Length: 166
Image (cartoon, rainbow, N blue to C red):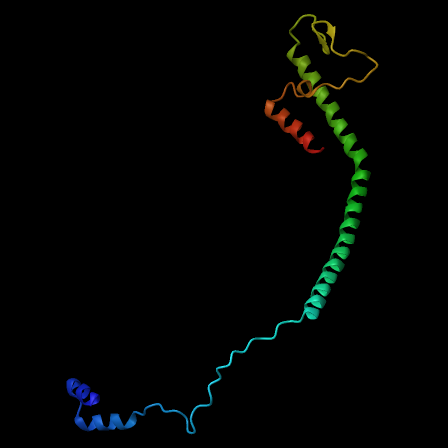
């Protein structure tokens, strides 16, 4: 009946309506019917305590083995780096002292150039008094004296860079 109203509204011929109704089939249950409905609740079996203990022990053993293996690699690399630093230390110290002496010479040359017009000025003295207490001992100037002719930012950079070493 529904097809008839649709066909009439859309202007389809009435003989086509009968063919359409014959070709449509309603879905039915299979022959013999559906199987029984499984309504029981199925709970999966839990792991036993023995299996959990064996699994945890195996996992722990693998973690310990991995830790021991990589710890040995880390210690050997650390030992090698420590030996390298120990071997390089005299060269680094010599290079640092060479740069300090070079800087002291630059400071002395700058002081000579700066004070060349002052009568009676002798480099290494402060208005005639010796800055260095003893001629036989090496005098290491403070950071402010060492970087006297530089910007304050240069002094701060080198001072804090030295502090990071310790």
